[in-house]
Image 1 (cartoon, one colour):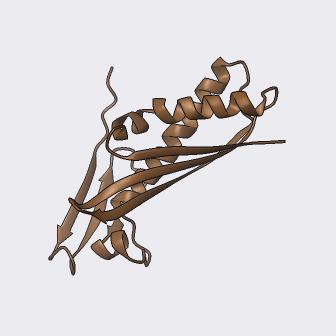
Image 2: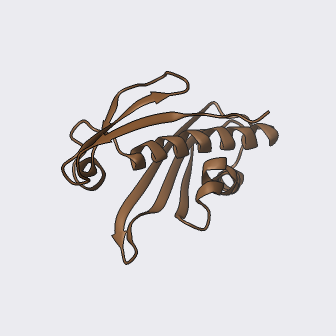
Image 3: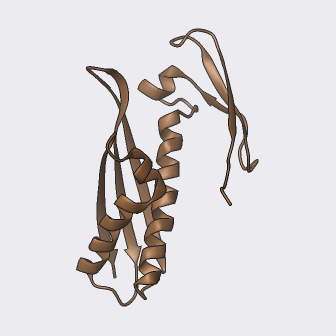
Length: 147
């Protein structure tokens, strides 16, 4: 069965001076997140942006993907700390998400650094959010195995 999720947003005013609100998400886990053009291209000032939400989605998706790979390897993680840095930049074609850089620090008993890095790179390419971005956005991962 397919999992279907929904989000709803409103926008008032022009792009540069207007503002918006993410009003609803299926889970109900958050509501009323303010967004603005300035929060995308300048300082956040307490507002989110689509790119920040993409970064959150990518970090959490990647963490799940890598955890699954490590489990199938017989070395389930004790802890994975994942960050995704999504870059929104003006290029010749206009404003675009140009990259998502993942960093992961893992506490994984019974694994060596080479295997951890290999599985981390495979998870970068295999998580569903990464596959959605593939070919459109530069993807990278920096993996560190901690003691």
